[in-house]
Structures are given as structure tokens and as C-alpha cells.
Length: 83
Image 1 (tube, rainbow, N blue to C red):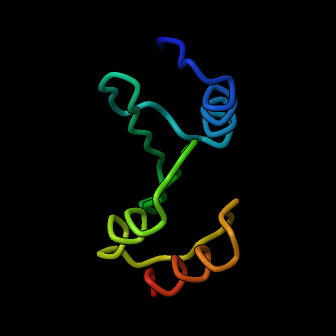
Image 2: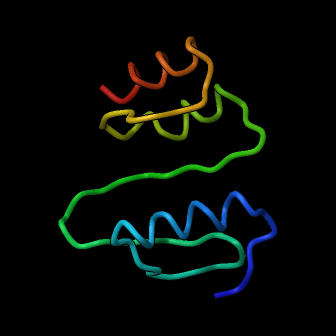
């Protein structure tokens, strides 16, 4: 595996690997991980974002928000858009 420029991203990858995730494929700095069990999980590590763009990108999906560092208003909008 190549090194990511962000120490935080390396730590996230290490934690996910310990939880049973493995690298499925990589394109540049983007990595797709998978794990056994048939569930679909999305992890986003974002330094800067546009809340409206995030909501628009995820609008077609359904699911639960487990944890974020988003502001309360944006997090609630994300939860609503995933219902």
C-alpha cells in the first residue's frame, strides 16, 4: 500500500483493517474496502466540504448515520435524507 499524505487517513485505514475490512481496489488516493457479512458501509474522511453537495451525493441512498463531526443542523439533514 502506498502512504496517504494524511496521518489521520492512515489511522482510519489501520482501524478499519483491525475491524475486518480489507482493500478491494485502489485508484490514486481513493480506496475501496470490503468485508464479509453483506452489509454496505460508507466512511467519508473529508477536510472541507459543502453540506449541500454532500446531501445531494448521498440522497439516493438509505441507511443510518452512526457518527459524524458535522454540525447539528447538517447532521440532522443527513439523517433525514437517508430515511
